[in-house]
Image (tube, rainbow, N blue to C red; front, side, top):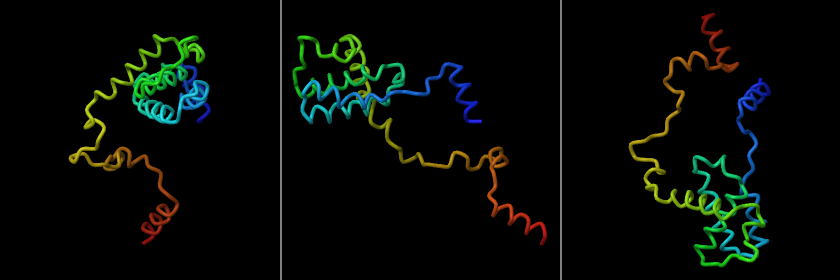
Length: 152
């Protein structure tokens, strides 16, 4: 059944295999000979970029370059200009600047939007739904208990 679902999703155009930009970033940092603090900050930017709604539309190489660009800018580290560093990683300056702006926009969202409020409480989303209760599978022990109740 799962295979058929995957085939249908692929036929509908869903991308089910995505590359993580995290796998590129350490290699890029090494090639650029940047230090560990730039690598750590770039990694943090990448983690935060996962909140971008359009993340699946951005090539992972560009995301990695944007994170490095932001980290270098944060620590005032100069990246190679001759040849332009981003060309080594198949990204354009325009792409990097666009994605960098998108990442920085995330920091303008109030922190309260990402925190659990006091009035919010975590619930089982299926609890209390009569319709879902009817479709839940029962365990073997529950079936046995039902059988014993019927006999009594």
